[in-house]
Amino acid sequence: MTHDPTPDARHIGPVLMDLKNITLRFGGVTAIKDISFDIREGEIRAIIGPNGAGKSSMLNVISGFYVPQEGEIWFEGKRRPAMKPYEVARLGLARTFQNIALFDGMSVLDNIMTGRLNKMNAPLWSQALWWGRAEREEVENRAQVEKIIDFLEIQNIRKTPVGRLPYGLKKRVELARALAAEPRILLLDEPMAGMNVEEKEDMCRFILDVNDEFGTTIALIEHDMGVVMDLSDRVVVMDYGKKIGDGTPDEVRNNPEVISAYLGVEHA
Image 1 (cartoon, rainbow, N blue to C red):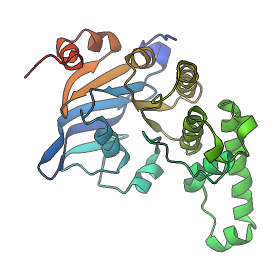
Image 2 (cartoon, rainbow, N blue to C red):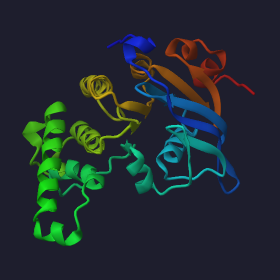
Image 3 (cartoon, rainbow, N blue to C red):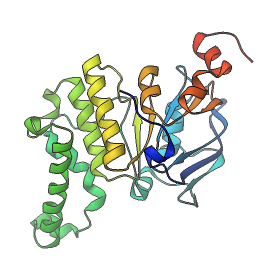
């Protein structure tokens, strides 16, 4: 499960998102301290660190759930103002969650269709009557969702209520819902958490395929270092809210400060 991390092989382009001097505080607690890094178009960018390092907080800043007190976020060469999460989604960002956030009583198909909400622009009356523009949009969006279902190999559960599915398949459905939004940047919060070895191998394959076949830029948080080193083009490392490493997997793997943080060695 390895890949060639060179820019030419990965079709890595210019900087798509640039996070500059991000600081996030909750009362007297500073979750993120003056962190800067960028995400390049077409790459798989990992954010790693020990528990409590601030990784999920950073993902929440990127996705608009948190607004940092200091710093700037630039997207496609333009400074991004403070936005609501749904506004960030309209820019082209979609995410999965550390704790699965699906509608258990709805079918797999209907859950994935919710990822197309930003693509549905027909007037409310048209949607209520399922007529005209609303009908055309529904058919078009359903066709896109069916392609994703085929891509992620979940055809046999498409009508199954999500609440009946095992954990690994729920994770795959959540990935499908995020893909349905056709994101420029796909944010994955611990996509392998709680999975067995076989499920992890499947998820790794799908993440690589999404990046390769769709050209989707991916930023992910993951604790499995084997997965991170195999999947990622570049890795940023956080510890106690600070950035302590940033570079290719090999550069990060050999960084003394990163080694210290993961081994629990005392450091300044």
